[in-house]
Each structure stands twice: as structure tokens, then as C-alpha cells.
Length: 293
Image (cartoon, rainbow, N blue to C red):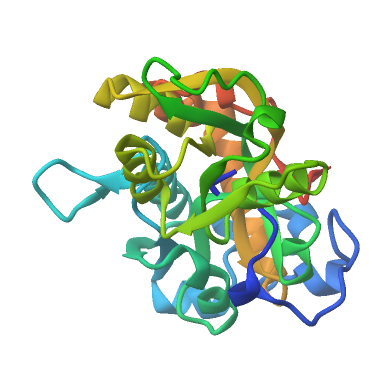
């Protein structure tokens, strides 16, 4: 999910910048006010002056991947793992939390355009995406195949999708998983692209397609809540999901990484994940671009 909604970058996310190195940057890049990252005592010490003066942390997400991001039943209030973590990070930074729901394939362009400060939306931390953004990694998951309950096509692995019609969320890592698998098929899949996972699942339920691929924690929730689908056990491309921050804003990257370390140490991070039944997807340590920070 994504969103892993779970992701190679689609055409809307085409990038022209060159991939830079991973891990921490030089102290000249990571200064925030008068406090370099290495000397900061708390996450709040690292908040860049511009954001500190604004008084708020602007977060973007793309609703539609429970339990990661969703609306509270009967409302337009965003909830889930990612909104809750965003609020906890903002609290650690001493900032007001504001969250915006946006189209998934517009999240990174919006970040680069300055519409929001961070993106928390089950984004897979991939090398391609690191050409445009920095990631503070906070979750680990892979894509799982979902089929109609009873598995009428007898799908067991991704190779069984060859020659069949499948649906995958556009702009997602799961689309990339399906496209790579399709390259190895003697008889090619017919891949349809949906706006999000729920739309794709409706296609499976109606029989228009035989399967989709959804991030494993999201897939488990959809199957449990609806009773209409089955989740196959194998996970594909399991790896880290990250909080995306523009590459030009390394100061904020360090502040967010420090905030996540504080949340991990206090137990609040684990509590949030466990409250949504995804404690098994927790990371043991906070990394930046998959490297120790």
C-alpha cells in the first residue's frame, strides 16, 4: 500500500533528479537553527526554524488503506496507523498537527511543491523514490495476493496469475510487483489499474478480475472485515515503508527521525501499531533510507 498500496513510481511520479547517497548528510546540511542533529537532545531541538515559526506540521496521506489510513465510520475524520503516528510526531516536535487527504499518485509531487511537510501514507522506501525524497523508515511489510473467497481460480502463487486478468493500484509498489512478474510470464497477465485497493477489490468481487495484490496488513483487514476475500500467505517484496520528506529538507528529516526514536523508546510507537493489529510489522530501530541514523 503503497502501499506495498504497497512501489515503482508510475508515470505521474516520473522523476528527473539523480539518486543521491543514503544515510545521514553532512552537518552543514542537517543544521536546524543553532542545533546540529548530532548534538540535539530532543526532536523538538531539531525543528527547522521555518517550520517552528509556522507552528504546524502539515501531513498528507491517501485514505483507503485500513488499518493504515481510513475515515472513522460515518465521518470524514482521518484515522489509522499513519494519522495517529503523524499526530504523535507533531506532538514530539511541539507543533500543531494538520492532515490532508490527497490522491496517492499526487503525494510526492505535492511534497516537492511545498503543499505539505511530510507524507505518511504506507509508502514503500524504494531507490527510485529516493531520487526525490528522503525516507524515515517506520514499518515493514510486503504485498499479498487477494482473491475472491473460496479461491475459485485456485491461485497459489504469483505465477498462477499468468494469462489471467488482474487489477493493481496505480502508482503502487504492488503494481510494480505484478509488472515484474508479468515479464516472466509466457502467457501475459492483463493488468488493469485501479485508483486504490477498495476499487480493485470490487473488480475481484464482481468477477471482472481474478486477483489483486495489496499490502499484507491491509489485505488481512479487508478480508476479515468483508468476509468476501482470501489472502494468500506469501508476501512479495517485503521491505520498509517510510515517512517521505523532500530531499531539500534534511533538517526536518532529522527532526522526524529523532521524534520516531523517542516514540519507539517510550513505547508509544508500539502501542499505536498494536492498537490496529499490526504490531508484527514494527521495526526494531528507526532508519533513514534503510540505513542506520
